Image (cartoon, rainbow, N blue to C red):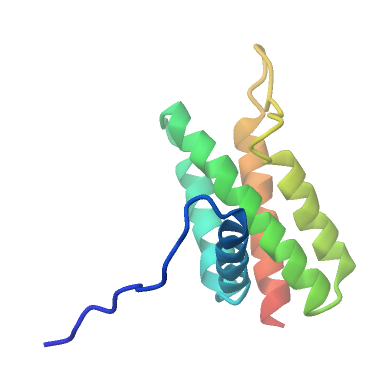
Length: 133
Protein backbone atom coordinates (compact mmCIF):
# COMPACT_ATOMS: atom_id res chain seq x y z
CA UNK A 1 0.00 0.00 0.00
CA UNK A 2 1.34 3.43 -0.94
CA UNK A 3 2.02 5.87 1.85
CA UNK A 4 0.66 9.38 1.71
CA UNK A 5 3.40 11.99 1.65
CA UNK A 6 2.82 14.63 4.29
CA UNK A 7 4.13 18.16 4.21
CA UNK A 8 6.22 18.29 7.36
CA UNK A 9 7.64 21.78 6.93
CA UNK A 10 6.92 24.26 9.69
CA UNK A 11 4.84 27.19 8.51
CA UNK A 12 4.68 30.30 10.67
CA UNK A 13 1.36 32.06 10.09
CA UNK A 14 2.72 35.47 11.10
CA UNK A 15 5.76 35.40 8.79
CA UNK A 16 4.91 37.15 5.51
CA UNK A 17 8.11 35.99 3.80
CA UNK A 18 6.88 32.40 3.97
CA UNK A 19 3.66 33.43 2.23
CA UNK A 20 5.61 35.13 -0.55
CA UNK A 21 7.89 32.11 -0.91
CA UNK A 22 4.86 29.84 -1.17
CA UNK A 23 3.19 32.09 -3.76
CA UNK A 24 6.42 32.25 -5.76
CA UNK A 25 6.77 28.46 -5.65
CA UNK A 26 3.26 27.86 -6.98
CA UNK A 27 3.50 30.63 -9.61
CA UNK A 28 6.63 28.98 -10.98
CA UNK A 29 4.80 25.64 -11.06
CA UNK A 30 1.94 27.24 -13.01
CA UNK A 31 4.36 28.61 -15.61
CA UNK A 32 5.80 25.12 -16.14
CA UNK A 33 2.40 23.51 -16.84
CA UNK A 34 1.46 22.29 -20.28
CA UNK A 35 -0.01 25.39 -21.92
CA UNK A 36 -2.06 23.44 -24.43
CA UNK A 37 -4.37 21.84 -21.91
CA UNK A 38 -4.76 24.29 -19.05
CA UNK A 39 -4.46 27.56 -20.91
CA UNK A 40 -6.03 26.89 -24.33
CA UNK A 41 -8.51 24.01 -24.18
CA UNK A 42 -10.05 24.64 -20.75
CA UNK A 43 -10.70 28.38 -21.33
CA UNK A 44 -12.27 27.60 -24.71
CA UNK A 45 -14.62 25.05 -23.19
CA UNK A 46 -15.46 27.37 -20.28
CA UNK A 47 -16.26 30.20 -22.71
CA UNK A 48 -18.52 27.95 -24.76
CA UNK A 49 -20.34 26.87 -21.58
CA UNK A 50 -20.69 30.59 -20.76
CA UNK A 51 -22.91 30.93 -23.83
CA UNK A 52 -25.51 28.79 -22.04
CA UNK A 53 -27.74 30.21 -19.30
CA UNK A 54 -25.48 29.95 -16.24
CA UNK A 55 -25.48 31.77 -12.88
CA UNK A 56 -23.59 35.01 -12.29
CA UNK A 57 -21.07 33.21 -10.05
CA UNK A 58 -19.92 31.23 -13.09
CA UNK A 59 -18.97 34.45 -14.87
CA UNK A 60 -16.97 35.64 -11.87
CA UNK A 61 -15.00 32.40 -11.80
CA UNK A 62 -14.66 32.52 -15.59
CA UNK A 63 -13.19 36.03 -15.44
CA UNK A 64 -10.58 34.95 -12.91
CA UNK A 65 -9.60 31.84 -14.89
CA UNK A 66 -9.41 33.70 -18.19
CA UNK A 67 -7.40 36.49 -16.59
CA UNK A 68 -4.83 34.07 -15.18
CA UNK A 69 -4.72 32.04 -18.41
CA UNK A 70 -4.23 35.12 -20.55
CA UNK A 71 -1.46 36.42 -18.27
CA UNK A 72 0.37 33.08 -18.37
CA UNK A 73 0.01 32.88 -22.17
CA UNK A 74 1.25 36.44 -22.50
CA UNK A 75 4.34 35.47 -20.56
CA UNK A 76 4.78 32.24 -22.56
CA UNK A 77 4.52 33.97 -25.94
CA UNK A 78 6.78 36.81 -24.91
CA UNK A 79 9.51 34.75 -23.26
CA UNK A 80 9.56 31.45 -25.16
CA UNK A 81 8.87 32.44 -28.73
CA UNK A 82 9.45 36.19 -28.60
CA UNK A 83 6.15 36.61 -30.44
CA UNK A 84 5.02 40.09 -29.44
CA UNK A 85 1.81 40.08 -31.50
CA UNK A 86 0.31 37.14 -29.66
CA UNK A 87 1.71 38.41 -26.37
CA UNK A 88 -0.18 41.67 -27.03
CA UNK A 89 -3.37 39.81 -27.97
CA UNK A 90 -3.38 37.81 -24.76
CA UNK A 91 -2.45 40.88 -22.71
CA UNK A 92 -5.56 42.53 -24.20
CA UNK A 93 -7.64 39.50 -23.23
CA UNK A 94 -6.25 39.78 -19.70
CA UNK A 95 -7.29 43.43 -19.58
CA UNK A 96 -10.80 42.69 -20.85
CA UNK A 97 -11.41 39.83 -18.42
CA UNK A 98 -9.62 41.27 -15.38
CA UNK A 99 -11.52 40.48 -12.17
CA UNK A 100 -10.80 43.83 -10.47
CA UNK A 101 -12.13 46.45 -12.90
CA UNK A 102 -15.24 45.06 -14.56
CA UNK A 103 -15.86 45.88 -18.20
CA UNK A 104 -19.52 45.54 -19.13
CA UNK A 105 -20.30 43.53 -22.25
CA UNK A 106 -23.27 45.30 -23.74
CA UNK A 107 -26.11 47.53 -22.66
CA UNK A 108 -29.90 47.26 -22.33
CA UNK A 109 -30.53 47.06 -26.08
CA UNK A 110 -27.65 44.91 -27.34
CA UNK A 111 -26.03 42.01 -25.51
CA UNK A 112 -22.48 41.82 -26.87
CA UNK A 113 -21.32 39.22 -24.32
CA UNK A 114 -21.77 36.20 -26.61
CA UNK A 115 -19.97 37.99 -29.45
CA UNK A 116 -17.02 38.78 -27.18
CA UNK A 117 -16.98 35.15 -25.95
CA UNK A 118 -16.90 33.77 -29.52
CA UNK A 119 -14.13 36.20 -30.51
CA UNK A 120 -12.14 35.21 -27.43
CA UNK A 121 -12.56 31.51 -28.29
CA UNK A 122 -11.30 32.29 -31.80
CA UNK A 123 -8.25 34.07 -30.38
CA UNK A 124 -7.51 31.10 -28.11
CA UNK A 125 -7.77 28.79 -31.15
CA UNK A 126 -5.36 31.01 -33.11
CA UNK A 127 -2.95 31.06 -30.16
CA UNK A 128 -3.19 27.28 -29.88
CA UNK A 129 -2.32 26.90 -33.57
CA UNK A 130 0.58 29.32 -33.16
CA UNK A 131 2.05 27.50 -30.18
CA UNK A 132 1.78 24.15 -32.03
CA UNK A 133 3.99 25.50 -34.85
